Length: 204
Image 1: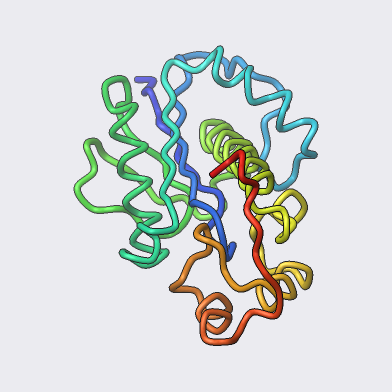
Image 2: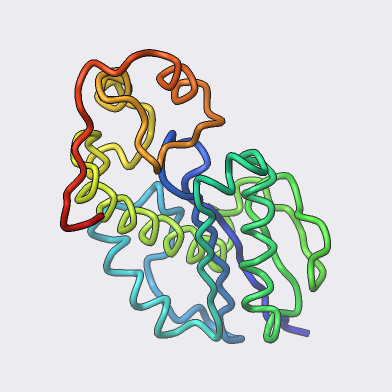
């Protein structure tokens, strides 16, 4: 019997700023309706952007969950990601017979049977699609944050700890979107900022 499988993946566990975004995708039974799927990290930005609307149009159901930095700091990054995965699966549980979650850990209290698939974003089309939705959604959010906090270069490194980002942290200190529970941000909080952080007044 063919099952409706919910593929689940996340983007943004490693960055120092911005949310973790988790997506779940369930395709209709039969041939996968989107060509060119792959792990989002193996695709160009242009290809991810092209696939994103195709996934939304053809999926039987999808869910995108944004876990904000405050919640990451409250729960820790692992638990925040597990929470996001469970919430994403709940969003498609009405059509999902089972779930495949990228990684080696499963969240607790899931609404359907689930498997943890190591390297699943390179093995399962539904996980690939979830990977793309999560990555593109998070990248769009980081571009919005760049418009609000242009000092940090979020448009280029998307919050990851690049040399440019670490230098900006040292110079300006953290902004409200930085994860206080991450060591480089915590260290920057304890050091005096060398410059004034200016926020775009139109985006306050």
